[in-house]
Amino acid sequence: PGHGQSSASQVTFGVRAASSINRLAASLQSGGYPKPYVLFGVSLGATTALRAAASSDHWAAVVALAPFDDVAVVVDNVASELPWPLHWLATPRRRAAVLREIAAQTSVTLEQMRLTPALMHYRTPTVGLHSKQDDWIPYAQPQRIAASSSYIALWLYPNGGDHRMFAVPFWRYCEPLFSWLDQTLYDQQPASTPSCDRLQEALSDQGIEAQPPERIIFD
Image (tube, rainbow, N blue to C red):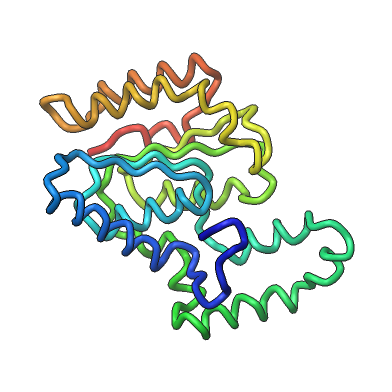
């Protein structure tokens, strides 16, 4: 389980969870549940969804809200906001030691926990959303993720709130996203420039910016 109930020996920040998600997709298919399958995730869930889609052809599309690449950066940002005395106790040295201990216990290195190396051959149509006010995941992280593949379109939400509140106003952009998914999954042709143009127009109406514009095109 999440929300602090997992032991440190089980935490791999999405590496092992991605394999579990892909096994679930295989089970669904063998059980007669028809495709297409879509992954949706927020924060760690978004990072795990991208990792799962990178290593399996089960997934037809991904919607990723506030994914991150480097867990060490996120841990530092989260620790900086801890209340006293936790902030005082969670020193940089102790944070680094905890991450090293997790890596030793799980046999998953910090470099393997990074997302972008896993996206080298990524070919799943994906829309990523990130808030300008995200205080835990700096914009450079999802920007680096989007730069890893032309199949990832990154959108910057100008008034999305901080990381803990980012998913709350989802109603503002769920309609154009579901429209894009419908076109991606059920059109006779795969996701193409026209369908992405419609997504761009719909999201722009909500004040959401594409970053950068060329990432809208899935080739």
